[in-house]
Image 1: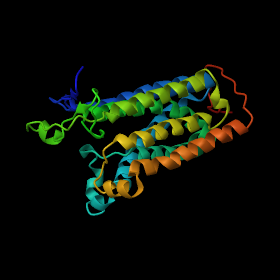
Image 2 (image 1 turned 90 degrees about the vertical axis):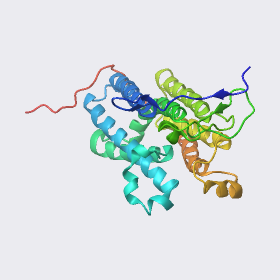
Image 3 (image 1 turned 60 degrees about the horizontal axis):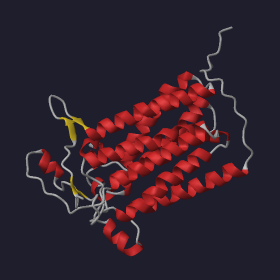
Image 4 (image 1 turned 90 degrees about the horizontal axis):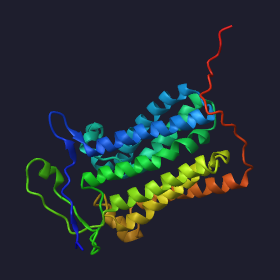
Length: 292
């Protein structure tokens, strides 16, 4: 058996004539597959097809904007408060999943108010189903970027990552880490399980007839996983070392706790309320008003 795996994957899938990074590709694939899943859900329930395009727009903008601002405010405000112009430099890295989640929730409240005229839970219960898969793909992107990995391990599946990845991409010799936990893979596998569970709850158990149930399971699964895997991760910012020493937790764990609590509350609330009876016409409804 191997004592460790030396990970030498390049962050770029294509470097010339245009640069295509694995991370961006995984993001794009996730959004496209997510669109297809929500399309099939809307078709099954007879929701207006016209809701899909604005929902896609809201979610893409909210994810990127929320994830970026989450990183700025949750992890590196000290720097960005002094260099506000760098907030726009998303291509230099710095996205936080907690911020992306908050951004999506806010966007769905706005979307529900202006478009569906339904409870935001109606959209969130359906939208969260593919997000677990999107999260798994993004973690594969992190793996290709040699980032967000764990501490040292003696397990045979430990990865030696390139620590100076930016310099390596510009021609420098690679400097490898100690064999470390590939926490990107751990999270990706867990997120796929959450995705499969949410798909099963919707398509096999009709859990959407209990508003908030699927969203609650999603929040518990995604952020509960994140909470425990964080114990194996290296901190993302140096100031978190003091936080971990004083509280035993890092920023990612502290941010995950409210989402897990919200998920538990949603599941209990859903189970205590009567199941709603929904019809599934398996076609898009046409909500356009006929001119009289």
